[in-house]
Length: 108
Image 1: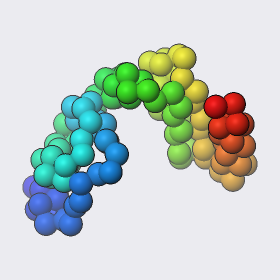
Image 2: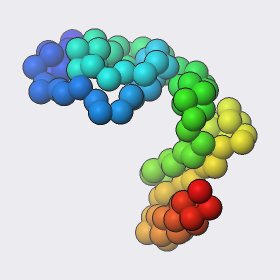
Image 3: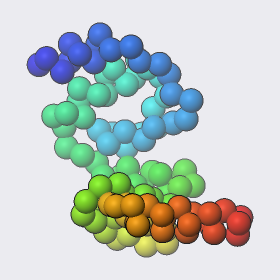
């Protein structure tokens, strides 16, 4: 398990914002917790539904999928139908997402 050696030797810092990890769908801040969870994320099942639900509970209302395809954006929309979901896969979709986010910010 070479990835475990890499994680234990990597220079990690505490996070300034909570990161909801897919391995347990819980917020993580401490570097020591990341060291424990990161190897598990490589071989454990992904708790995607629970992760998105936890993020919604914490107040997240906008999700951006970056990369080709829309699988995660589609899943997020099913899990949290009230959320706004964007998919960025090229320059045009990036510009459209930025424009929509700017409009959202004006409304707040």
